[in-house]
Image 1 (cartoon, one colour):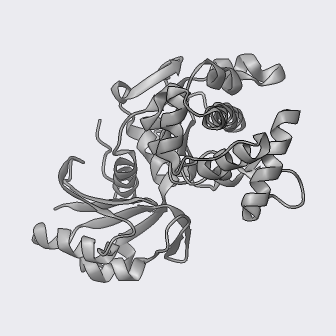
Image 2 (tube, one colour):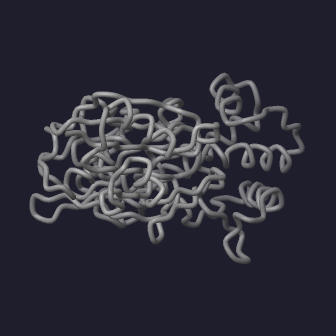
Length: 329
């Protein structure tokens, strides 16, 4: 007996076979925009495992509607029926989850050894937990308990509203909206959070700041912008990353407050995992800046989750709960 789980992001398509105890026994990775489609990759893994899985769970970066997902940051659609045919299972055995619903499920078996805590530590009792992930996009998920049974709460928190915090930032937001009008929220000087807090958004944010400051925007791509900011080699890149970190801290703190995340707020995703230096004192100050609730926010555990398999483990956890199997310790 085995189970097939997947984590399908804007950049990579990752699959794993797990045994009944929850251990990964085989895995494979492909480019999401590559020639290998998800059904083909699933069929190949089933062939390697010499049989159909007991169940399938796929975490996908998009909104799940009626067994279909249109990926938010990749030109791909995913169908439950197509996956069922590829894996030779009934459609009812295939679960499609939003990627950060799966990320939230991963918090049910969180390994504290894979978390770098910025304040507090693992909560002694299960409490609501929130995970925020700047990657190709910006993912948000939460986990709550009903007695001893965990339940993930899906959502699209990456598209909440950001507004300028100073006169300086007004010009940056105006330039960002001019460059990328689709991310404006109504007629206000406001953008969706993903427009700044993601690997897709940061190049637009950097160019907007450079434009507003009358500087040349020489850098291409998120990796180059973060590298230049870390080295202090480009003033617009430095400002873009400093402000991004502050916005990220504020958003994470707001979500922790809204959801009563006594169990902790966890940052993950490729942007944060590859650039942990940006989660600095200014980030922490923004997280805790809650006016009358600043002390409440400062009491929340806050950490950087360094587990690259959080999506796969979350898909596994969801599948195991659906099958009434115990979660791994």
